[in-house]
Length: 142
Image 1 (cartoon, rainbow, N blue to C red):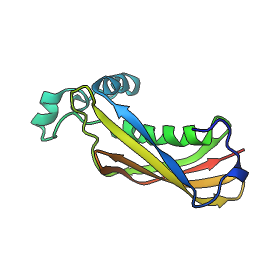
Image 2 (image 1 turned 90 degrees about the horizontal axis):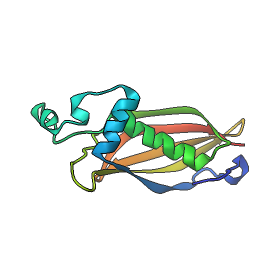
Image 3 (image 1 turned 90 degrees about the vertical axis):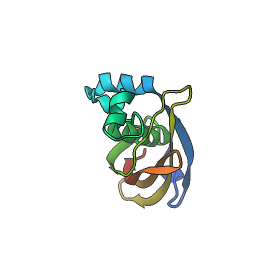
């Protein structure tokens, strides 16, 4: 989103554009390897359904990582994310088809703080459902 964003360019209340992140079964398997979390519900449809899930679901931390990626991409390479937190509110269900699922992330600058810090509120949805709540970041901009 941003090559180099400066503190002076950012205004409280500014809406940040929505970005969509695709989620496929392959991306979940790759995340299993990267995270070491090989829980069957993240890649095996039969087991996911046997424990009452609608289908394979994305890792919560995978979903959180997409929101973190959104903040990092928006702020640019010179910025530093100093705080980041979310609460998980719903599952990202990932069907085994050509589309998979999508996580849509958007944001709003809620405050400009001392020390070139900006506070950002994030919204993350999948299939029309809010999948993260209380998603916030504080970023130090150059």
